[in-house]
Each structure stands twice: as structure tokens, then as C-alpha cells.
Amino acid sequence: MDNNTFVKPIKQGFVKNGRMMPMTRIMLTLLAGWAGQGGCIKTTTGIIGKHLGRCRRQIFRYLQDAVEEGYLTYSRTKDRVGRYTGINIWLNFAAIRFSNTRKPKKAANAPEMLDVTQESETNSKFLYNKEADPKMEAALGRFAATLDFELPDLHPY
Image 1 (spheres, helix red, strand yellow):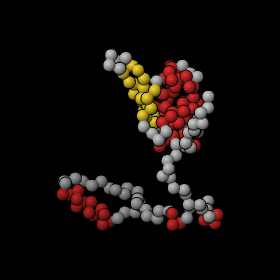
Image 2 (cartoon, rainbow, N blue to C red):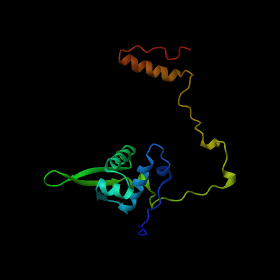
Image 3 (cartoon, helix red, strand yellow):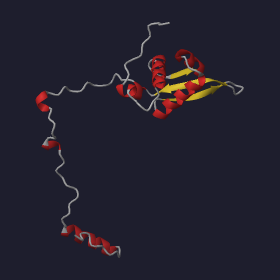
Image 4 (spheres, rainbow, N blue to C red):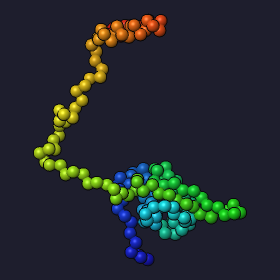
């Protein structure tokens, strides 16, 4: 029965993740709605299975799939006797939904958008060159002499 609950906007990368099972995505969306602003979700695999129409074993597979993709972490809870009573789930909201702190990108003007890289955006400093530097070779030769090391020919070409 619908009780007018909703899920905050989720990321498109989360929805389009092809490595994840489709029902894992639905389960994570359901859990994101349950979690609200964040924190720990205390539930059982049976309760999640009842809401999704799946068995506990399949819910366990969905949880493992979500852990492998980095969307959640969970731990099992025990009573005083040592019996497992449920699970605690912590969602990775940064990977699932948008944050309120995002700033909109500056709208680019059409004339400023070009297909080629502007010259100001290229790196004109060449860190590696093939030309021999006599000052550098002399300095390295003096350094090698202090270490009793013979300097090989750096430019055989």
C-alpha cells in the first residue's frame, strides 16, 4: 500500500551501473528511502525480502552485490545468546544520491564551446627532450665521481 513516501533524487551513474543486478538497484533505492537523512538502518533480510517479493537468500546476494560495488556496508546483530537477530546497514549516500551542496555548473556560451583545445590549455613545457645538456652532464659526472660511480653514456644516439 502506498503511503506517499518518496526517495530523494538519485545519481544517473547509480541507475546506469551495468555491473549491478537490477534488483540490487531497486533494493538500494528502497533502503535509501528508508534511511532518510542517513544513519544506520536496523532491519532483517526477511523484512527487505517481504518488501521486494524475494527470499532471504536472494536478498543476501543483493547485499553482497551492493557491497562489492561500494554502495553499502552492513553487519549482523546478535542477541545475548549469540543468535543472529538482524542486520545493520550503512549506505554510501555519496554514491547513490545527489548532495545538497552541489553547485550548478556555469552555463557555457555557444561561441566559447569549441571542438579543439585552446592554446592556453596546452602544456608548452617539455620535461623530456632528446638534446644533450652539457651542464647537466657535467654536474652528474661530478656527482658520480664523488660516489665512485662511472656514469654511462646518456645519449647513445
